[in-house]
Image (cartoon, rainbow, N blue to C red; front, side, top):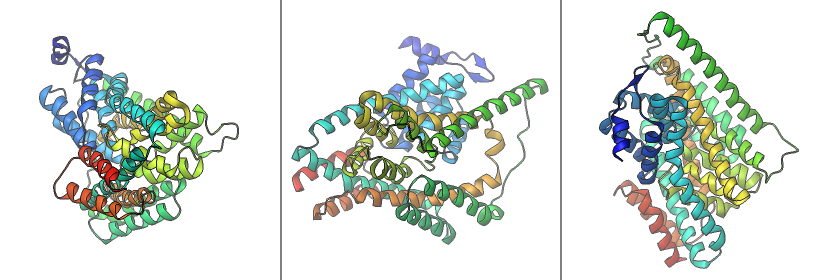
Length: 418
């Protein structure tokens, strides 16, 4: 332990960044991933406390830049921020090990829960517990959407964008609907809000020597372009039919989750209607009840809700399927995050991007509200369902009870009521 602390205190710099060991990054984020219950805000708070305040490896402004960029890009916000921190400290390998460290505790916990559920889920007590999870998860989603709406929905234009997004997702659904919502909301944001946003489209002056700055700029453009080509390949592979690719194959798992991961603007809750349409109604990998249970299990782990993808992979192909689904759902957004961080100074002050993001955020709120409806379709028709939903919502909104306590308590109530 003393060796790790000594390494973290070593402040040799590379390109102006304090350098730490790769082992230190992995071990630090492994510990953070084991204790950061309470959603992405809790995880980000722990990361800032350890990396910025205690270890003093980055400045607070660096964290704000990472969070702003993560909110702009698709994928899980917290894991993207972790990848950003790892990249700033030790480059691409640092980003990979940091993200892996923060995900692994939740991954192994969810694989264990998946094994238990698929083996004993038909027992009445287990079935009733998961039935109690459903309205509690609905309350968590509604609370999240409501909290986001306070900042994202500032008037009737944003409200109508959010409402339209929810209706399109519920009535039509699917990958192309999600794509249409995101790009449509961005265009509406440009049209409606650009004039009302004070922007700063000037480039940040370079502090490096001209030849060094030019070389770094060229390398950034090359790596950014290569990353975009790879990410475009994920989307094309997901969008184009593959007749020779069996539905229960490892290839189908990777193609499906890697493609969807790049459409998850606004965090993991947006993932619910999209993936439900594909893995439940389309490929039939899981039933609606199993899908809802996977979301509930994701809520009681310390990691992001997207770790629920591991359950689906486990159901299809066991442990390796779970690992592949997890890799596919987290790797593409993290790669995009790392690549975009190289051009962060050019985009973070853009008035056009801010306006487009204002429209996208309003749409995301509507998409998250629709996720509660999707989950609610699997709820048991019983007076206890409404009671659990209302009690959980009050506990979240008024009493500020952590999600980690809400979900298990709902399961116990489900055993007693159903």
